[in-house]
Image 1 (spheres, rainbow, N blue to C red):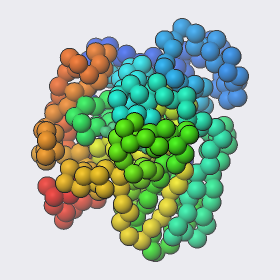
Image 2: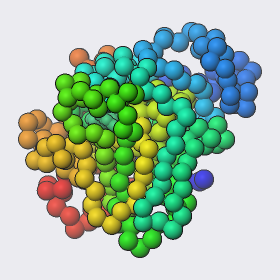
Image 3: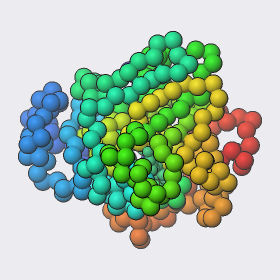
Length: 334
Ligand SMILES: Nc1nc2c(c(=O)[nH]1)N[C@H]1C(S)=C(S)[C@@H](COP(=O)(O)O)O[C@H]1N2
Ligand SMILES: [Mo]
């Protein structure tokens, strides 16, 4: 699959400093004389040996991926892996930022099946690990902007959402795409406990308009930092929609359904006055309880003392997506 690499896939000006904090794992592997093919089916012990210099990540069991690595522009700060895997929102694993990593062991992402269904000519079930093991995934470095006004820059690996949807051949009634997270309280204990799970009615559901889903930026991630996704980041497969607030990027999905009507979405159901269906990042439209004009970028320092930076319209992806919303009132449809 070929995607024209656009400069704004990459963070720019505001993220630039003299020092990159993320080492390209592929270069490390090359240095060790190991090709990607050797690493396609590593043993658990092999993974641990290979990365024994790494700081252990709480609750994470991951293994290297075969990826087509993105070019990393000089000096771009990518959020350190240790921060991206210990400061999470995944309410099914607890509502404190450290809970998902601590409770990650409950989720068993292997095996995993994802259904693509609904208003399509050819519904299918995808064996996610078969796809992971057989493909060279594409890496994309995207900004993530949480509605809570913190942000990260993350190296995802995966495939375009459009490519997967096309395989199912959507029919003319397919106007929206509905996504659903696994429902299994044994693996996602927050689903069985109002206090742990934040009072959400599970499963977590999300949705996009069909043209948003088919936009080349919309991505299905199966990896992070060149390795399979840790459970706390939505293993084994999650959505990434970088121009929208983070809650749209639904984790651990089991179903992608093409539908005719706009589907219900979790945070909109919980508080429709605070969270819209579109949820496009917009620094000019404040959340009812806080400003969205700026954000704390989580780099080396973590959230406290993190530098504040201005939030960009569509999170910096306006060139790619602004045309999707022509004629819409962006103040209303945040
Ligand atoms: N199923 C599910 N998906 C989810 C969430 C969640 O609680 N449950 N939280 C969302 C929010 S608010 C954000 S900011 C991102 C965080 O992704 P990360 O932890 O990988 O950075 O996941 C999103 N996807
Ligand atoms: Mo978020």
